[in-house]
Length: 290
Ligand code: IPD
Image 1 (cartoon, rainbow, N blue to C red):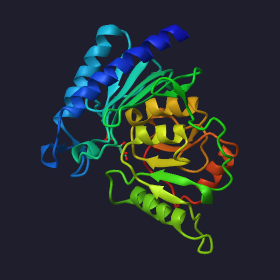
Image 2 (cartoon, helix red, strand yellow):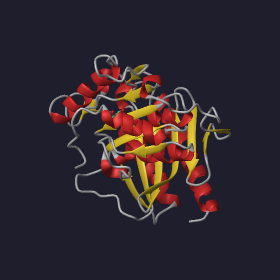
Image 3 (cartoon, rainbow, N blue to C red):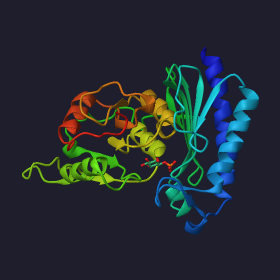
């Protein structure tokens, strides 16, 4: 696919993101207006469903030959293939949306050969738009190149980092223990065997977290359990901003979009060493995605 075609796709995704943003900001949900999927903290609202319908209709009209994978219409067993595919989360950060915490977005990814190739992520509450095309850079609000600091500081040690993590919806079992024990290790003093990171953040939107790493205001983002539609768009933006994505479990430098385990590191000298340092603090191994 040539760059003109990809730019046309990006422009279409940007206009859809704005339409979706108007639907989301007009919705005024309440905690009582949501339903749940897997358990009481895995939320979904009528707005998630209506926005996905609008997006899939708009994409099918213009690109009838491309596949579509969306959070609200995904069925167990659906797989991402090598075909050009829109990978979409109508509201990433549904819990934030329900609580009117203004950190939620529309995440519109386009994968070709299962590689994130176009990404558009739009937070309609702050009117912040991130976009990227593989090989052609990533931008904030279409004109400001990412990362925001074009001469980013070297990544010398995890102890200098602001690290983003998420608790996710699974609140027991092996993977929950890996997360919470690792969170403790990351924050603990060096004397007690920890990484003594500057701090950790848990903000509630995988796509915006990836854009935070792409921008450079987060150094690292580590998560297991989220899905292809949470990461596809942000991953393209991250790579185009010079960031890297590796596996949340130690040792795998080439995670898959649908692998459900991710460690993102911002641009800067020493990225790979920082990923290895992070892995050395991971307590155990995630089962998800295995
Ligand atoms: C969720 C968010 C959250 C992540 C969860 C995702 P949703 O997406 O990205 O940050 O921790 O794993 O499911 O449900 O709000 O679209």
